Image 1 (cartoon, rainbow, N blue to C red):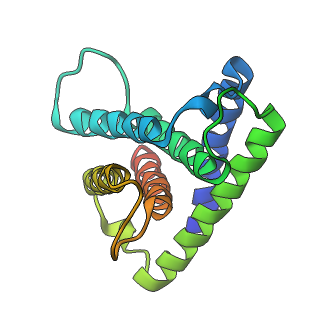
Image 2: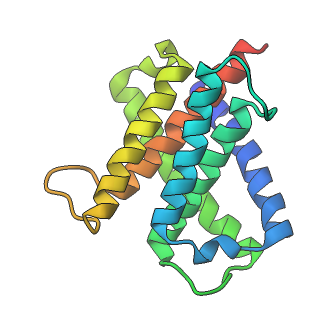
Length: 180
């Protein structure tokens, strides 16, 4: 499979989980402020790093599930940027998936453009390096949030979330390829 097909395959899995959770919980996440979503993603990325560094674990989880969570929370954050935070779960399932798909399209376009420019160098990276880049992006996003969204010369929050989605997809491609 080429990168576009691999991207689509990973995103289909993340979308399916998003749809199932939307059926279970609705769109209760719509009340979350951006800072709360950033913190949720940070927790997941920190957990992945812990899984990578610690040989023993007391809760059976794997990196795959955490990277999927990072993708879905990042997409929720991008939806919140577009729509603003709501006081209630104001999207139905169909609307939520439509917004989800719009954000996936943005991430995929960015991935295609960057892969063209960088020559798919991510394929030579380790999953642990992708994890570290996600954590770095999150620390940058948190700093921008603490600065009320203002930057002097840096990319904004949206660009950070899009990169996090793509780094997570790349990590999942690596994990799925190495397990076969």
